[in-house]
Image 1 (spheres, rainbow, N blue to C red):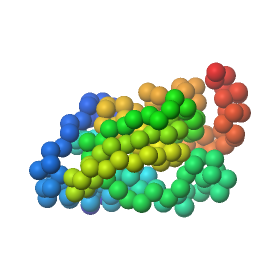
Image 2: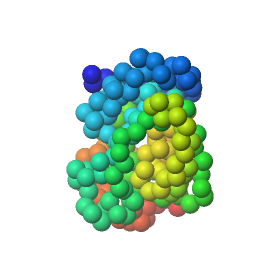
Image 3: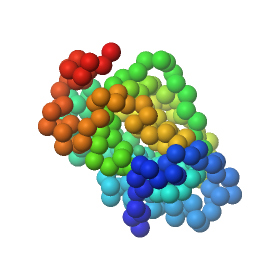
Length: 194
Ligand code: ZN
């Protein structure tokens, strides 16, 4: 079942979500919640969804990036380091930054519907989490996948991309396509971003 995605202003998006216990992870309720989140993410469409976005204040994220069908050219996919990421679940995730190096791209959020902004993110991260069966795993991620992980795990901590964006770049999706479909260096220069 596709769930409604809550929008900015809903208090659930601004609180720290709680960990799930091993018993909860094995429960029917969480299994069907994961199914609903997968369906909701695909219908949106989006490449990630965090439980607070459907009103559940728990540390659960689903991610899937088909990378194709995004309307991006091969070059745009390449410069973002965007490759297909199969569907997976992260429960109680912990994020580490492999370096201080950051990279800027436009980013949006299903809970800030219709807008986008240039947002810096770490280029490379390591995540430790439990999978849908409660099994521990670790993964190193770079490029767009690293960005998705940072965005979704922020949701579990009551953060939105608008807390990290260059505020002067905030734009409707239409105006971003109309005026700002430019090399990032040019966007920064025109808007006077240091
Ligand atoms: Zn989001």
